[in-house]
Image (cartoon, rainbow, N blue to C red; front, side, top):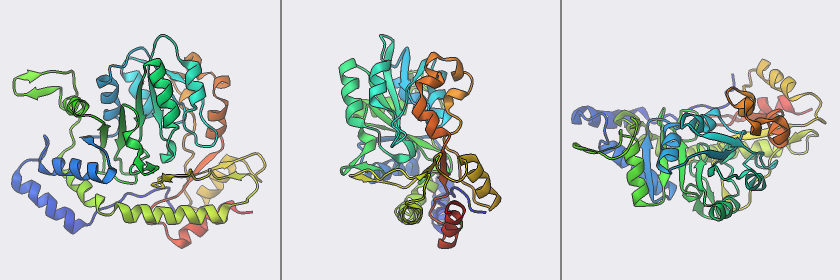
Length: 364
């Protein structure tokens, strides 16, 4: 079986050494020494000023919305994982879906502009498959209309554009460290902020809003990362560069082997972007010899497990399907992508034989 992804597993001996430190300290949560060390090492690696660790990737989305003072309507994308819009809904806000760019799958800035109303207070955009949004256009729109910008960067660990981390774009960015991601802490996440005051808010949000033993200054939640997962992350971080290089090798092999196949579209690489190769989507168009779903089932029968990611669109699910912005006619590009995409297996352990097995299923 060739899986779509596999976790980045740390060295057991190194992990055991750090876990021994945890046992000896008898401190297993509440910002222990390994937690603090992982925050600093991640900030250095990702080239960001401030980062706050969370227990999973959804909680920093909720915290980002709360700490940014977002109200009313939030313009967002239907072409993403359901956690993005769930965070808006859970916050008592209204998601307003707009269409996406056909080449990147990221939110279309032109459609953002058209969807702004007096109730709009924020844009929640997603760096789809780790491909950066048009952050310059989004920033210009947000500044002109006085909107907050939150980036769901769950796929974008380590991604840079023109030598700068894309995590520094917008007001805040969120990361997921789920086991399926390029870097993981088994389960975890982070909130990246650009100022000391926002960092303080992010830290308060993850611990009930507790400022000290006699002061609660914000309505927070319990979303702290424990020392065991911090230990896992510290050891995994030492292997992430090698893992990304292996992913790059896989992506380049796919790109070369699948080029020129009628009906198979491969997104172009963006200039100036340092990718993490978190996903490798292909789009199965009408001129291909079979439908997307037929190819998907053919691959699965051969033990090749791709993923129709993101299918169905969020706007196909309750409670979103009844929103005016969810109407199919408003989102033709997003529907087209969702109905044609297959993300091929890509991870650091994929062998040459595995890749050839995948390619064999697609080539005529």
